[in-house]
Image 1 (spheres, one colour):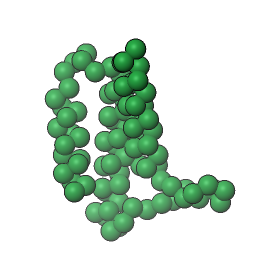
Image 2 (tube, rainbow, N blue to C red):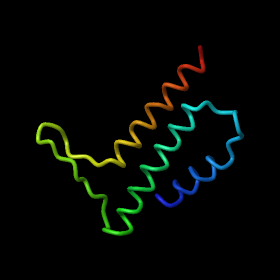
Image 3 (cartoon, rainbow, N blue to C red):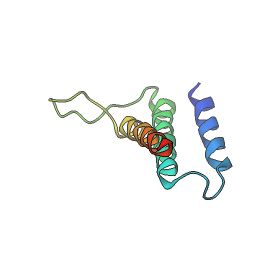
Length: 84
């Protein structure tokens, strides 16, 4: 399922016409695709996603999950801005 999702994201990113989506959409897609690819590499290499940032006062997380979350947030912001 992860491979299919990565394939769909990559296909969609190559089909974007120059100038059609905003720079914010492109940044959001890049963060989502990069985070998903990072998690996929962890799963292939180690058999699980490695969580490696532990601040003891916050849940343990990794950079890939943070990139996906930030990318989705940016995409939602761009959707809200485009409706105005």
